[in-house]
Image (cartoon, rainbow, N blue to C red; front, side, top):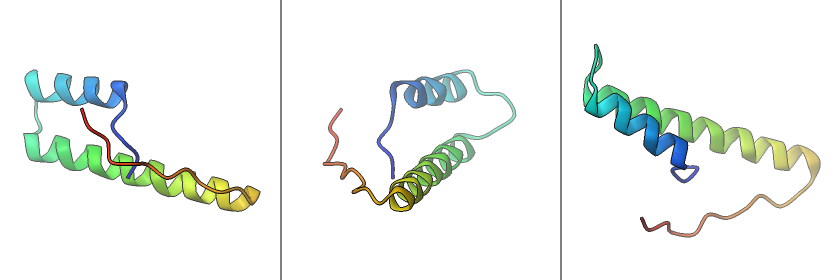
Length: 61
C-alpha cells in the first residue's frame, strides 16, 4: 500500500471528526481501498516503462 500522505491524513481526520452519513469503519475502508489502488497504479506505471518501482520502508509517524 502507498504510505499515508499529508492529504490522506487530513481527509481521514475531516471525515472522522466531522462525521456525516458514513461510519468510521466505512471511511477507513475507503482510505485503504484508495491507497491499494494508488499502489497498483504506480506498479503498473513503472512496469510499463521498464523501471524499478520504489520500495516503501516501514513508515513511522
